Length: 498
Image (cartoon, rainbow, N blue to C red; front, side, top):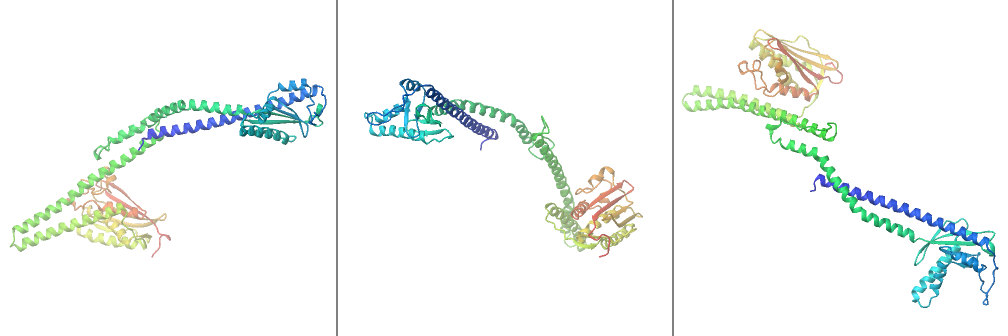
């Protein structure tokens, strides 16, 4: 496939050829029109000069010869003057010709020349008949007429006189050869053919050089992008040179934006892989140890039961982790459908609060519902319950014994606001931007020693909220507690019981 530079040069060359052809055609047409007008003007001037000669000379009158053929009314002096006029000149009255110029007489002589081959002599006779017929076919006020003869093309201009001039002259027709039009066309075409190769060569060279300069930024972009060979070099960026507002600057900025997103995605993928490997390695190690212990004590039923119980616990933990990963993977691919139905969010929140109260009793944490309003939303009941249960469970899990967790629901500006507030250990300000990242656990607030999970619950909760056209906000201070706020759009009808 031809390079872009070659295609630019070819396109530029084609455009140049087309422009040159159009220019030559316009110039030839303009020149032909100018020469044609000049020929018409010459014929008109010759006709006027012939009229002046006839008006200023004496005539001998129209006579007939011995055979009864009318003779010319012009004296030898008049005929001599007329013979000096150029072109094909025919002078006569309304029905007969009084005078032929030397060019017309030459045609007449060739038509009567018995020495010529019959076909050629016939062609000259045809030319004489066509010329005479055309001369008498022009009417008063008629435009100049071009007659195509066998040996020439002639433009005829007629000067009609009523009353007649001296000697009874009513029609003076002057014809001028159109050879100059053909010669002009041939000359200009020859000049164009001789100069076109040089002009085209110059234009192709200019296009090649211009294409190189235009594509130079693209080649630099290609080199910069080519240097980014794997995920470890995604920190590099394409250099934006020259006018950053032109198309190449826009291309470089777009590529840099894409590289930034890829860098973030690759970093998240590496962290995800490392965290998933770490989360799966521990339960697998425990299961392996339990199996080895059971095999080492084949006759001890109690040891078998303890090993199997520990293995079952780790399997359950791994199952939950895998199911969470599968949920997020399906959500990323858009293959997880949310079934929306009208529901009373208050019932969902109360159910979640009751579960949180049971968990709080085991840890000595009080769960309260200071404010509960009936708010209608459209959503998936199971997914919304999972969202709020994840947040409420985290609040109970990271609140010390004797602490309090508040769960409230209210309607505000066509939105359902669910707030889960605790007075637990809190989250550091530097960690807040990452609380919804997968496998995220802060050093103080998300550790296994406090019973922390795999760090996928908040990521799933955020996806559920976004799938319901909502969002989750978080505010926290280390050692002062954390507040999660879930905002969902109300269903048509707003706050009402369903």
